[in-house]
Image (tube, rainbow, N blue to C red):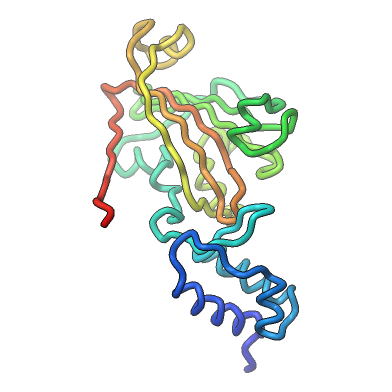
Length: 235
């Protein structure tokens, strides 16, 4: 059986990117089509296949880049609360505090790389383990990326829904951690004293195609939550 042309082109591109450093830009679809004497559609299909495999990633209006195996490794299990708590032998539970569709303000538009007034899923959830409040998470997801969030997903794992139902893969995530004092709402939901010192985490997750999937604000009681950072020397 004859191998599809796009698979041959995929193999050629794959050999080329092995010679490039991570995050290097590859040739344009037009240039690759001329180089391999095929149509741009064939090149595009080959590139999409490599993106799905995590070997390339795309930035809108910029180009396609060589993926860093570590940076663009799927992180669903790394940041997924449900899988993390289950792996520790505890029973995860999610309490939905609020869910609504909102318009992005300037801050959200910048974080999500969308336009001001674009529609966004706003989901505030209390994440619990063995009925003990662990974190308060506020997820913001562009409607342009995920049109609907089923009720069953809102109450459980968004990442499992993306992976299993939509076959959408997270490529990378950028997270910052700071200290903050609990305000009235946070102290009530996490069951901590007002102005109690908490960990405040901001996470931005990016898909394989370069789109920003979500911006997440997390409030965590340091008595129940540990941030572990792995580092290595860069030679």
